Amino acid sequence: MAVSETPVHGDHPTVASPTGQRDHKELSAAAFERTRMPMVVADARQREYPIVLANQAFLDLTGYAADEIVGRNCRFLQGTGTSPAAVAEVRYALTAGKGVDVELLNYKKDGSSFWNRLHVSPILDDDGEVAYFFASQIDVTKYRKVQALEASEHRLLMEVDHRAKNVLAIVDSIVRLSNADNPAAYASAVQERVQSLARAHALLSENSWKAIDIRNVIEAQISRYPDSHITMSGPEYLVVPEAVQPLSLVIHELAVNAVTHGALSRHGHGRLAIAWEPSPEDGRLIMIWTESGGAPRPQELIKGFGTTIVGALIEKQLRGSITRDWRDDSLAVTLEIRPG
Image (cartoon, rainbow, N blue to C red; front, side, top):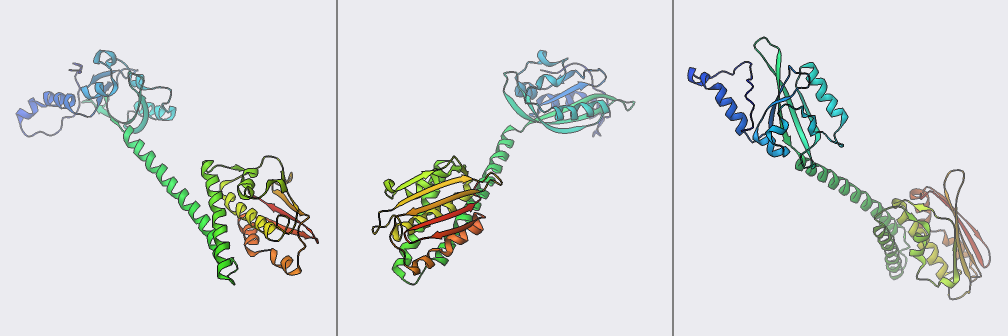
């Protein structure tokens, strides 16, 4: 039995009979030893507060034998991960003769750690002085893991909700702003735009929803077009996840226009140059989309190119602006955006 013979003095609880009073110490000792809650008693009259009693549950929890801990201060349970603030809180309570409740990381004899919900209470002698400190320990490691898992799941759900709302807002814009005059053309345009978002989503998933280099964002949208007609130039520039999908859709719209009416159309043998450079003043990204040698552009196409979708995406989601410089067989589109 891992119990010291040192007596514990103090007020006795009310008992039912003289026999109960005579048996009080024996019953208390038996209850202390046999309870499944780890417990120790430390001598408050000695400077180092050495342990004088430790029950079997405490020995089982920590892995120590009775003769390895009796006479020692409980600090042997501390380790590299133990919070100094939590230790200071316990030390202050002991010095002041007060009780304390605290959770701290402790270590077993084999070096493994556990989260200890520690409760310390003073035990007074007949003169009202603190004679001992009673301490109970509860291993809350599993509980804290469940808490951490629940918090992680909550954050994940909030992030999924945020991402879903973002992409649904873009899809809503696609459905509302796409030209619906021709049902077949409308359905095809909406489908292609949703596929563009799907490619952006796949890119984000492959990169664990971390910031992505803009070159990769652009390539995901133009890789299906003849690369012999396309050049790209610019430094590494990381696009934050929430900007990848709207930027991808903007690039998709520009590429579709180039294929339908511009430098990449079957009517012309033009070239597309995409260049980007971060602004040294405020970190904005300046992207210049230059088409040359494309098919002649009727005036109605020039007026119709600045689609509401592109403008809305750039202004509302990318916090930027777009300007266009039209010529007979060329086009320069300048985007100033904040996707980083």
